[in-house]
Length: 361
Image (cartoon, rainbow, N blue to C red; front, top):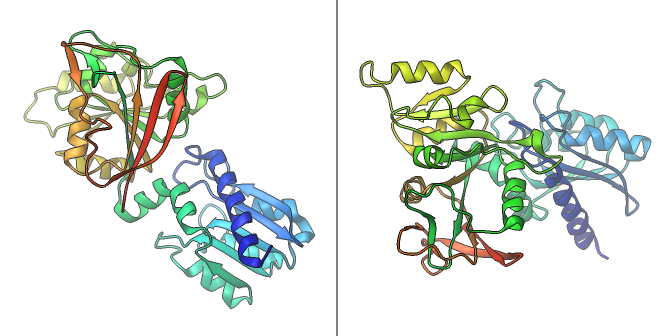
């Protein structure tokens, strides 16, 4: 195995490791790091839940003296600034590593090449762009928030055999089976926030938490697009806001209308975010550290995101159920995918199928 093949092999392992804490590292990205010496992994680390400690010091601690003269593989450029923890670049220098292979340079203005410069100034060999596409994919949410100042948006839809996502006036309709629904809960656990419109919130009265055994503590922040503050204070979302945060996105107030409803929601612990449009809403969420957002419903909200060109990924679950003439038409079908989206992969979950589309950038 030549050096390039070895680099790809170990960076691929670092990417897999980085996914271990996806969605659990707060405003920091989930980064994977391996310390390799004489072709063997002597240390490994992934950004800890909550964002600290970072991956590099954990991997170096595991490697101990074996880190001296070793090669380090890290999916994102080591940080170079003093925050709540010292710079990871300093830790790598102090450990005496000989070489650092980096997947993606960090667009954060506090780093942005400075980590590379610090390492090179200390005599460490640095190579960047190792499996860059794979690293960018794993870090897509973080990179989106850093470069576009908005979360990475995934639109999730469950569509019946006749192209419907629900039934008018019927509330929540089960279109997919239990395996698909469990997969959606797993997706929630690795997503910073989940969003629905007020129509879905009122019709279904969902809780939007993660209910898979062992992942209950990883429920995402819940967001409701609710221009007129119509979310009932007695809803499951409002009543659980003190336990799992809820943001209601409302239109800027016009006089005193809605003051009473606002007070009732805020008393339950609901945060009110006033924005005039979808773009401003996403910026507001990004300023709160939200890097990934999953849009779950309904059709009106989905169309608004699609029309604004603010969807990055579409997960199209297709069940074996037929809704009929009183159904709510899906804004997206496999046969009518918006321009720019490419089918990346497909899954089978029992009798259901899930097609995963991503937008080309």
